[in-house]
Image (cartoon, rainbow, N blue to C red):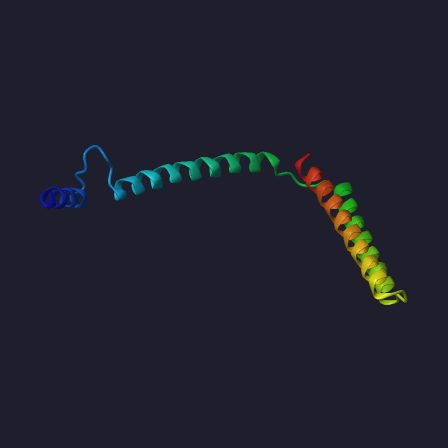
Length: 120
């Protein structure tokens, strides 16, 4: 019985296992498949990226600039209001949180518009 186990260990080390691939063979196969998948993804992204790249028109750029200025002014107004808050700490924190949510929503909305303008 010991000879059978020793022979199996020798065969496994030499890569001769009955009908099974060795670990290095499996890794090279996985690497080859991974490289193929990565190449396909990169090609797909480059094709879609090239189709989606377009310059914004002058009115679209002006709209983006107006949105940026509007967001900046709104943010400054919120910070002044937060600094002047004379209510309880909990109510001031609630107002700050509401302001942050509003600012994030405005930024997301404007970014979506700019992305749409870039793609169109």
